[in-house]
Image (cartoon, rainbow, N blue to C red; front, side):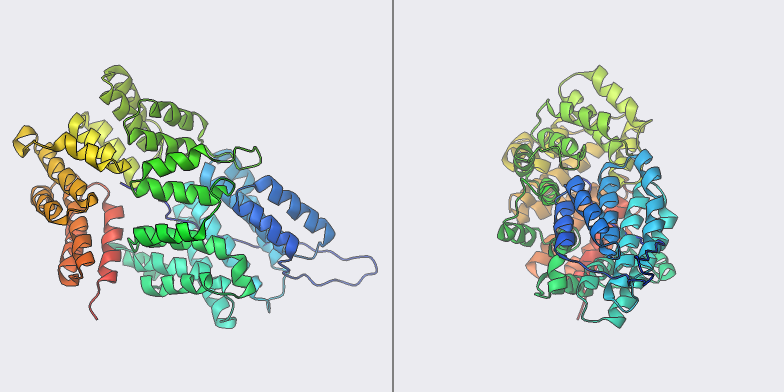
Length: 503
């Protein structure tokens, strides 16, 4: 299960009309000057100290009304605010600003590499925002406009490194579209491969070009999410993070990145540690997502107090993503605490709150509608394994045979769960045996365990260098139909097929 992965990640939009004629009647040309004050504002915004960044930008607009970079950076403030918090009221209030900024930026010099780059970034960011608010068609076309603007900019200015940041990210995304959705890539005119996209991102990260250095941290954000979720190179991701030695106390964007990736890397203790040591100065963007991440991390060690954080998230969050999944986690915790009335009340809320845009939210709704509760032993093992408490999870299942679980769905999960725990403990031989049985039992069922077992087997073969068998298993995932987490697992399998391509 992916907890927000998020990062899917982010998408842009930018243009607006503005004229300034200084005393004397001579028109001063507009320009893109990423000067020291703009860099300072950008750094504050990237740390999610949005008000401090805004103050610097407003001062720069007054000091130099013809510098267009502050208008460009204003969009980052809207992006982070809306993408992380999903407040519909803020969305309606801020959305008109996109067109206004695009018109202002249109006054810039088309001979500048920032002219098309700034448009590409804003299209990209607003596409990501629109997805969060259910405007998928608008998001798709903004994504296309971002890609084409970036492509044109690279053709005109091949040495302009920042353009590679978004082009690389979008190329990777295009390279992982499952076969059944290739028509969408053709419709939008977006082409790319994982290798080409990652090379572009690495070129930005490794460049000493002054303009590339400005966007180094933002490029690293995209690069690490893609390397984690698409390339499945998790060890390399955390080696990179440790080498960078980021300040996860005072830089909340990097704190979120490391906390979120750690949670999805089955390191719940790291997530808790990062959140507990955050600088809580009121100048940072107030994000209910911190409570969600903390609640998940605590639930993974079966802490009943996790519901306090998850309920606080629900009381403050105005969006619809993750809501059903969070309520499912609350219902599970009450179920494991033998509080059936509270468990059922939480489950009833799943039916009426949130949306089903993510696979996890879809699965939460399906479980709630089924009326079926998970086997408590298997549920505890799942949560403990998700958090990285492998030995404790294995102890719950040791000594049990498949006959211990009379329900066929539980027999399937038992085999998958056993295989996953052995896999996480670095015992691939035992893991493969359990995965094979899970695949046999689950190939034609709606639960995701059979497909996920095939995916994990593909990973094991890939690590062994057996690309032929890895491709067979990844193709198997794509061929399986109508199971939970279908989109997410297909994307991972498609990425695996590309990594293991012949030749």
